[in-house]
Image (cartoon, rainbow, N blue to C red):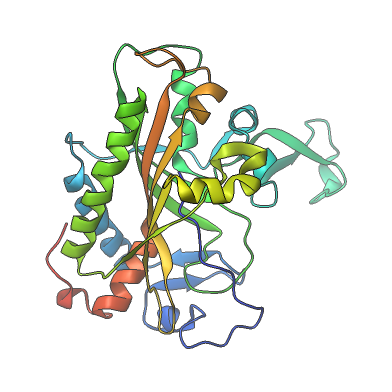
Amino acid sequence: MTVPTTAEPAAGDTRPGASPDRLVAAGWLLPTGVAGVLGFTARFEAALARVQGALTAAHPHGTPGPSWHPPVVPRAQIERAEYAAAFPHLLGSVHALAADTAEDAGLGEDARVPTDTVLAPAACYSVYPTLADSTPDAPRYFDVAASCYRHEATSEVGRFRSFRMREFVAVGAEETALGWQQDWLERCRTLFAGLGVDVAVQTASDPFFGPGARFMRSSQLQQNLKYEFVAPVHAGDPGTAIASVNLHRDHLGQRFAIGSPSGGWAHSSCAAFGLERIVLALVHAHGDALADWPPFG
């Protein structure tokens, strides 16, 4: 569901490679003047397309590619998932002027009101509403992607506010979700080895358990509900999460009233990939010349 970040550095971090300047100069990124918001060159997009191809090939059931979802999701869905209650500081809310506002209102900060949408914090939040208030008669599997947003203002490489995420999601009985998590743990190891990216696998915690998530962190770690694949994305980087494999148990099944074929609430699991971060890890591992990269995708 998410690809959490490493701890945010202090303001003005001067570690080598800790700002995007080198990647801008090398022709990978395009500055916008706003921290954490970057544009991407044709070369970056060519590399990202190769990553997408490798992810498609890694899918256990075969997939033609992801279904792309919009960068905004209904506010009510995010509230139902309890994301807003757990991490309100990360959520980007869409505000707009009322239809009858005077034309000369300009930006109208005081007149703008929340709309019925928020910026998508993860791709899979568009999945669970499609199964809400139902009991599927068989496990359901999804390959989804979306442009996402987390409100983290920093200029460190890899700490994007606006980014793209691809997720492989399973919803069904408890054993379905657990099996999906374990399968993708091995598939991710194989995937990154094929990409020539050395990763460390670490247990972590995540915000999908609602407002009590921060107090459940130690329990989540003990239960191995989340694993992150960590790799350096710039010189001096001790490691940044570029992918994660997550077991949600029945939290989202309960929140969206999705029944399990075997009774009770459905369990879910996902493998999530930060597409831009994977490209940065590849650039760090193999250099700026795409011709020198291993043949994948």
